[in-house]
Image (cartoon, rainbow, N blue to C red):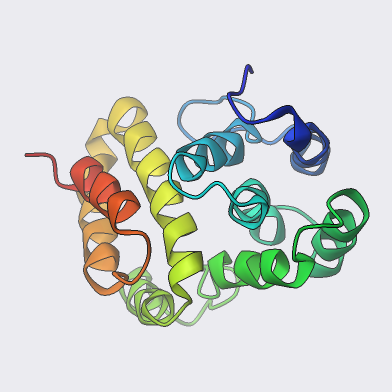
Length: 182
């Protein structure tokens, strides 16, 4: 995948390729690592700092791989010494879904969604900005590759964006345009 991200992010891209391994996106079957690269590209158009781009690149690592926050922290500290490794790691943890089905088997989807929405409303504006890029790319993909599921999925994301409104306003508006097209 060609990426418009600055070459200095090549080590991070290679790391997420390794950590995500052979995972594929659910509906498009693209290599999973292309998703965080696309999210980083979306975010980088409005937030050019290294922490935003690195947070976007690593945003699904804890949720979708066996690697944890300590791995992200060590990687950022070792490869991007001028970046705030604590901010990147904390942001990734803010973006990690705490109410996945496997983590909360006693809760139904509606209740897990409600709790995750409440949690996301309280994360930092910086983390919310990264989440807008994630929602934008996921909704574009769902619209294209799973149109039957899109109506339900987009409705959930619209609810989240209504309460998660403290981040970068252009990124928020871009996400809203994908979720609720005019």
